[in-house]
Length: 349
Image (tube, rainbow, N blue to C red; front, side, top):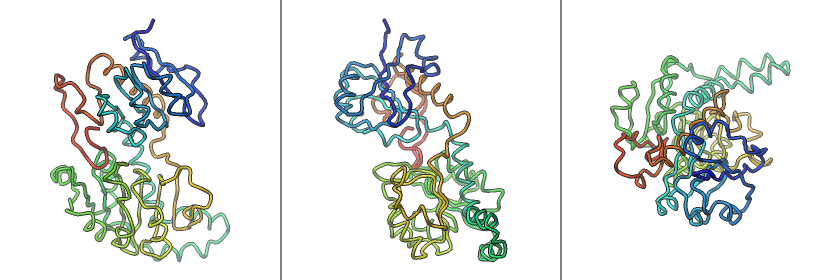
């Protein structure tokens, strides 16, 4: 008989694991824990299965207050992701349940992807590729005559957590002047990386030739970029988002592109994923899209599975996890230091 039972709802639209949680169980088996995968499409069905579980292991599933309030014995809710917008964290906090995530696991991949979108959007890569394949060679070069030289351009980073810092490191050799806005990060953290801190989002938007958004999907950051913000940008500016779709009012972004408030956009995330077929962004030459894949690499699956198993094992063993988004629920006896809050990473993540 297992000492701990962990319930994992099967991922909607994804082939069930069939009970194969070998990597997660590397840390869990020694403490006598088992993972049971359940098909529970409704909140009520999940509560029925998980009400006496010791932990909830969540993968691409919304965990509502209804579910959380139905967990009679839950000691931890663990996410195999950076974002925590799939869990109603306030409800978990009210029940004294820590919510763990992985804010520091795929930083390099996401930074690489952000840098790729910056360069591809600036050089209009997709459009240039299409013209080359269509034999429109004479048309291609004049399009780029309108582009300023990348060296000397100002790159503005909204939020300055792990990913933005890694992007700054990559962008510096290209000759960018880099500025950043994040009211939760000390200025010295930026200046030590040769990044100029700015006092307001408005200042960053007015000054930047390229704006790269790295904010999380929190209540404060919801629709951080609206019509007012896009109107504040330069008409020749580029907008890049590898953070979360909910941080952008998509209708405002579409209007900004249509009416020429900004020049182009490179997006890995959208408000609705996958987007509906009538989404104007899908047919815009000014837009480069990827399918929320910035963190993907060969190490993605094994690394996150091992990490999430370790996080659950730590909590079930009475210890602090490595990353917790609501640390106020943790016992005060563990003296390990927490990483600083940032717009990009969220509190305590």
